[in-house]
Each structure stands twice: as structure tokens, then as C-alpha cells.
Length: 412
Image (cartoon, rainbow, N blue to C red; front, side, top):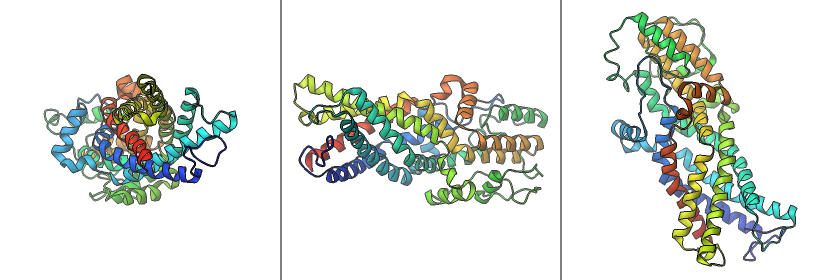
């Protein structure tokens, strides 16, 4: 870390060398942390993205974190927990390198603008501010990466919803009800937002939006007869990997499509990073006082890990609802396609129209609209869906990131 307007770090090395160390050590620490956390992250994203509670009597796909984990392993194997890992690994490199470089650079800027003594630590408000600004910078890199990750993490869930395989046993008793009752139930569910209707085989449907038309190119089922130039998706969108997601997103939405959910990401990263770095610094200071040590370099590895673990918990608790809304925005397209697929399989024109309308709404819904609809449907519980598993995953992950980063700085 450099100080004030100096071009050298604490050890007398050039500031450029310190920045390169931050990039390298932050990247290594980020990769280690991502490998530790990714299975739990997959569980979190699926819990956050599953359809809201409907009035049609259909249960949710997952009743909680343990149920979600068990079903993923049962249906997809352990590999299912690591779907979409490639993109987050790149993201972990960029995120942590950016966070540590920005955090230290902003501290230097604060020192320069306040004429602070290079040998005196910054105040806690200054450290929290540096963390917040570092998170804001990182959010611009993270949003596209997280969008790719989330789409890959939920595509199997979208397939299950589109075919009805995830809830077939739970709704077998209601499947024999009249088509008019089913249509009414689907209509009610769709008005609640992202819920998945029950669905037709072949039917002429109303004019489709460009979004739904583009979904058809990723469908494994032939398109039905339609009145538009491009067909409506008749099955869940299937991606072959991160590159396929990037190609589809750019072709369908352009560059702006990669920043869907950016407001949520920026809020989470700004507030979360302020807490992440701030709580870590507070914990480190407490350990230094308790030990009677002169600096952080005198602390033992378990103390560094404990401080990092506390930072991880604070990062996720501060603005968790923003992360939930972000995940729903970034996966709305895939779940909307599954809704259309189920509607088309039901053989009911009204269900298809409702699914199509809901898909268009999902494509247009902004941060506030998604949050408002989720709160109306499920209250605060919906906004904190997946919080428990997120806190569980963030504790060891953050401990690993800070532990690896600090030890690399000591050793190299």
C-alpha cells in the first residue's frame, strides 16, 4: 500500500510495483475464494430466482437451502453445483484485483487531499468511504460477469419449469381439473409476476415481442404457428456455455443487455464493500489492541481469517435485498421462456396469452418494479430469500480471500 503523494510503498518499492502486487495477490485470493463459495452461490441464485408463490396451489421448486442443494445434486450431480463457474472465475480475478487496487488507490487519494500523516492510519469513516468507492468501481466490471453466471446457473431450473418435471408429483391431483379452472389459476399466478403457467402443445398466439422471438433460437422444441416473423420460444433457453450466453445477450439486447441488474449490483457492491473493508479494518484493529501488537504484520493467520470471516458476513447482510432483485432481473428472460413453454403445452390460448404478457413485463421491469412485485407477493421473506446460505458461503470465502491476500503480501 502506498501513502500520500509518495511514489513508493511502505517498503520503499515503487507505487507501480505495489499496484501490480495488489492485482496479482487480489486475483489469486479471488480465485481461491470463488472455488470455495461457488456451490453455495449456485444454491443462492436458484433460491432467489425461482418463481414467486402463486395462488394456483403449485409448490415452489425449493423449500429452502438444504432442499435446493439436495435436489441439484440428485438431478444434476455434483457438477450441477459448479455450472457457470468459468465466468465467475474470470469475475473473481477482475473483482478482487479491482477492489484491492481501488481500495488502496482511494486511500492514497484521501491522504493526498487531507494532508494526512502517512504514518497514521486513516479514520474508520475514511476507510469505509474508500471501501464504498472501490465497490462502486468494481460493480461496472461485475454486472456483465454476474449476468452470464446467473443465466447459466438457472438454465436447468428453467428447463424443469418449462417441462413441468419439477412439480409433476406435487400437482398430480390438480392436473385432472377442468381447463377453465387451470386457465383461471394460471391467469392469477401470472398477474403476481414471474410465476410459471401450466402450458399448450400447438396454438396460434398473439403478436410476440422481439425478446420472446429471439428466445426461439435457443429452444429445443419446434415453434408453434404464429402471426409474427419470428416464433415465440416454445421451450426453455439452453446455453452451451458462457460464450453462448454472451452471443445471445448481445444479439438480443445489445451492449445494454449486459448491464441488466446493474443498479442492484452497484448498490450491493457499494454498501457491501464499505462494510467488507470497514469491518475487516475494525476487526484487525481490535486484534492488534488485544494482542498488544504493533501492526497487522504481527497478527497470526487465524486472526486474519477471523477478521476476514466477519467482513464476509457484514458484506452480505448490509444490502442483501438488492442482490435478490438483481438476480431476478438477470434471470427473468430464462424463466419467462419456461413460462411460455408450459403455457403452450397446456393447450389453452388464454394461458399462452398470459404467459406472453408476463414475459414482456419481465423483460421491461426495472429494479424498483421487480422489488415492489416481489415484496407484494412474499413480503420481506422474499427479499431475503437465500440470505442464510449466502452468509454461510461468505464466511469461509472472505476469510480465504483476506488470508491469502495478507499472507502473499508477507511472503513476497
